[in-house]
Image (cartoon, rainbow, N blue to C red; front, side, top):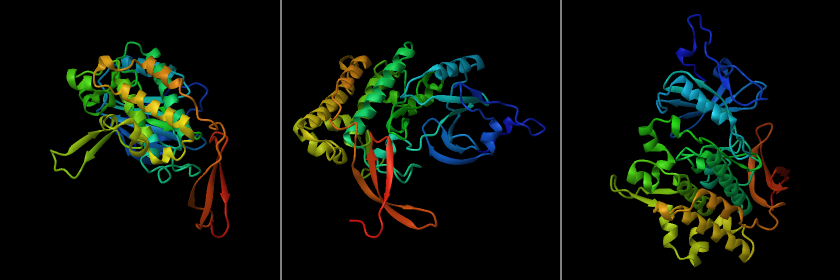
Length: 372
């Protein structure tokens, strides 16, 4: 990573230190980050992310916020970072460390997830953009339901920990749902609304796209619910929540809202027209399909434009937790796709991918000659 000039004193030494928030973690210095090999990841709406490869330490993600954060006092900023550091939930990506380089330039450090984000899997870029090549190219129904349940439980936890915040997450979207090696969801970019510049948040953060935010200029306690509903629809349909019709001429281009489109379809047509075909292929029996449709109804209830008719977060979580886990989800044994991957010597070798034990373990099976 390139070091900002302000991180060096006149004699060339680094004069700022990372502040670590997670105990019992191997620590490293700012100089280690800045001299390490770094890969530029996608530029997110809040800042640029880098995958940093450190010696003797697992890969980290460094997210640089420039001109997007409020000019908070040092004490207020550090107090909020400490609050984030105290959070502990299996479906939250921990904030490992931070650095306040200046009033407008800050670094947040988290663990790197080799499976990257849910968005990569849903929108067709999974294998090409992930380090873990031992994975399916499509998420089956049991995995998608587990992701939804994990996200919902993490949101409930954030609502409990930040009761005074209108939007305890504030930026819930598929690219901010990271996936562990065993496909457990981990939320990122949570609880940052208090430290993000208001004008910037209005233009970029997911909760500010809710109907009430458009009407009043402020998100509400139910804006995260609205975002969750759209995220669930994205998981079930495999489609982006907002789709732009590029065939129309700007500025008259058409923006299609996923919730409005799904709501316009009769329920009996959901299986054929709305639900992702990759998901449908993994749904076994009418009971599982009924559960998929029930989750779709919950999602639409979360997307109600009228805030008063929208569900409360606790109601949503209880309804999602009550959904029946598909039979056989504990042990999956499916061949997802024949793939090619480079092996030693640069020769491509074909293999099949087999998932076992709740997809917590992925096994390569090399097949000589032609695959049948």
